[in-house]
Length: 159
Image (cartoon, rainbow, N blue to C red):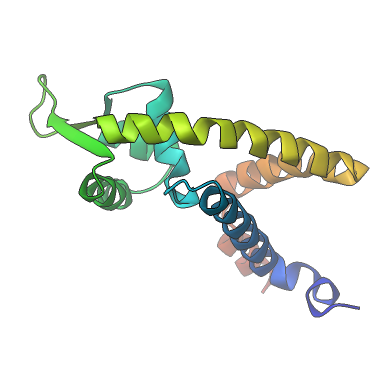
């Protein structure tokens, strides 16, 4: 038996991280093979902006459930690459609105077919095993449960 499955929930987070890193690596491989200079870690910001732009940086942070600082760092990085631009919000000059630059719009057009291919490939992957079809539902349920009571509190109760 493999090391990871033998430890059950003790390595749950490690297995999820390992699987996540594998998926990101494989997706990045596809972008590279297609000659597209895109990193899978940029996907959440690109996807949000593909649906609505300009978007306040704070709204991006809220939607992605990450810190404003993390969004600011990513936006700064993507601005340096010439993919995004920011402008002060007219209603509140302290807020920054984020939008694609022309180069970012062009990149978006290149990556959208890859996103559809990823969706199709993942649909086929989960169809290979009936239990896999429940993975997104199960993850959502775990996320909801730990929002109600953090894992650390649950562990503390067991001590």
